[in-house]
Image 1: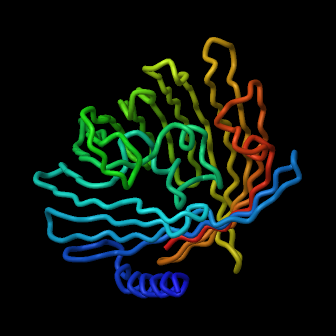
Image 2: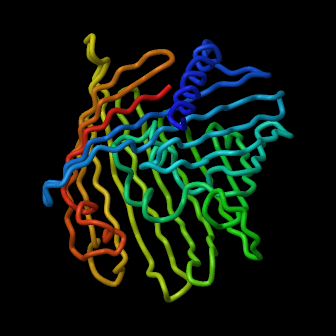
Length: 334
């Protein structure tokens, strides 16, 4: 019965999406639905094990109530088999360039193109987008956009519960963070950010980092470094970075519209007193993409090489986590 309900919901959302997204922009009052389906096959060469999985199946809605207010709702039907509520927030825009978002929303720390399934360059996220902290929390996020001379600028600051999502706990100490962004997604952009996370007596962290990206018409390159400092002796400090790039090659073919070769080098380290990183990883991939006005998809094949200098507890769940592996992914977004 639950499967039938989910299928009915998917059909209704798809139907409304086709009607709501006929235009390129969303006016008020209006609503627009979106979704992501991310299916994967993985084979770990070192252990000989393989698996199929539905990594993500997201459905969301964005709505504009009037010129000064909007909302965002997003659910995960299956995150490796688990149902999750992701976004539940409302936004007010009292002044030009200023927005105030209250509810469950993203913290001002991560880049969406590293953590959001529909915009990632590879099948698997970079280390710093997986092993540091949840990308969302319950709280208040303020954003202010303006031009610093001719440079587009955005300031973000937020106050959050400092706990896992969907769990409105009572706490004395809240998490808080801020980010400054200079530039835009086309051309050059740089950001610096920090996030203070006093979750409990044992898990009390300070995160900070910076990133740079440049996107031209057919290629882009992105790099980021982030450090986690532990304020207790129960956890270690952690440092991670990535450097990645991709090149879009248009192709006239009935099956796909472009080829997208991509390469990434990322690393993570918790033994900061030793030279080098504990684990390095090289990822290469090729994507076969198909674009349409309402739907887009990409068939992606990635291969990951792990270079393990020191064993890390974050990879201890199974032997496949830090094994060289090939991943075949079909990503569909609407």
